[in-house]
Image (cartoon, rainbow, N blue to C red; front, top):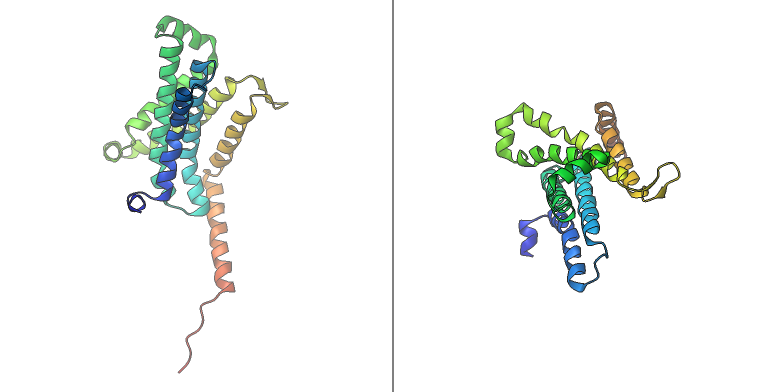
Length: 226
């Protein structure tokens, strides 16, 4: 098929998944089966999808370390930009549909509910990463580009904290709505640990040892003496 000549299966899967939340919302709105509290539902779904895409973008590098699949590194930017798109929609719903652009009320709410301040911080930090994610900025910023984009390791935990804090429940008894953000946090923590140089080196050595063992078990046949 022509589409598989233009895009890899992973690219197609990422684009389909990224647009799935908006497509599903549109289907429910058109069929009249959307939530009885549409604004809150829109906020929650877009925010959840933004965090999922952000976490997925952060998993690309450690997953490549584990399974050596370089295409993952090429898809980080796409996932990150989709995360920014959903985060922007999430914020627009909050400030426009939920609070009607009443900025004084929005400011008061942000400081009354710290989890919103945490989410706003993560969103504001994500914007420069989206703007500078293109190659032209990589050249312009030089070494500072990498330093800037390493802030994603702060943004990710802040986004998950915002998600968990906004939910009602008890983390110690795993009651309420805390389980899903807890899973996000655990996944993020595991893969952040895999980014630690010592751990990364150890995993690379395991892969090298595995290849070495495979070579010993299946040595190349010697050429016949003639």
